[in-house]
Image (cartoon, rainbow, N blue to C red; front, side, top):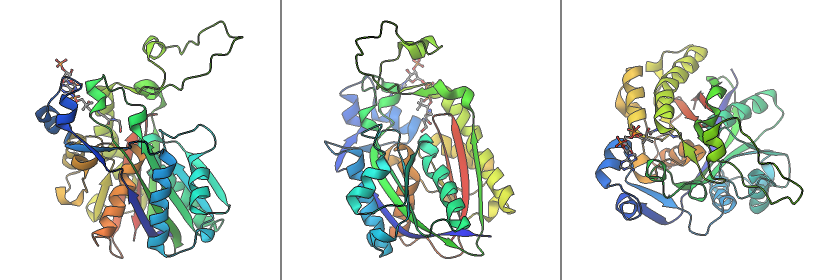
Length: 331
Ligand code: UT7
């Protein structure tokens, strides 16, 4: 089977750290609630930095790590739900900044499952031989859309970026399971604001009173519904990807889950009946950084020298859409 080789990794988080105690000063919460209900202790917040600037920093590090010139990258997929612009794409702005001259460059929005979805797109292009070297860059400035008066969501999210560079690798295992539940599209929503067009007299009707009432530009989440979805979706995606790969879930060496809530990961561990040390968790330090969670974890694992040839990794994510996905990559 045509598998994937990861040849470069880069991660970037902005320096400003916000603790649970900092949140206790702005909403009715405390460190004990946040720690026990979510596993989060701190998150990093972009203080004036733009999403594309963080993405470009991660992309530059990945290029340096791979030891390749930007010219040799012929595909860039950027993932974000919190970009600086609706147009141009984040991918184009990052490519411009790091000197990638052309090729296939576009954004992919699969929310917190963005990286996992993008890995599958990259694998298809590489396996077809349509591209030789592909970069996935994820960058999120969730602080621009979090409602800092809503204690149920504001404590969860942080900012950060990460990039991974891929090439094809023959005779390696690869499998994926990409899924969605679009009926839950409004479970997590952040509406764009629009200009005041002088010719419009009607206000839009979303067909949902709660969404109609939601303020533009601020994230609203039915946290409990998403929680219930996630604890079923994560094990289902891992099991289905393993089935596609023709291996047992016990054969996986390392599972890198989306970092939304430590309790979601713990429930997945129980349901999958796998040892806890097979799961990489860094939520305490970063909170939920949407699409950047998994590639940032990968870049940390790489820096720690924990990725070795022959290992079978599983990336599993879920998020707004609702979408969920898992991919299995043999190193
Ligand atoms: O990346 C994908 C997107 N997001 C997620 O995956 C999030 C999934 N959901 C979750 O992680 C959890 O549902 C939350 C962390 C959002 C909430 O945890 P929960 O255990 O589901 O709490 P809850 O919503 O059932 O609320 C329990 C109580 C409520 O108080 P009452 O009504 O019981 O008096 C909330 O108002 O906890 C209260 N609460 C808080 N209390 C202190 C909610 N947020 C806070 C807070 N501090 N920050």
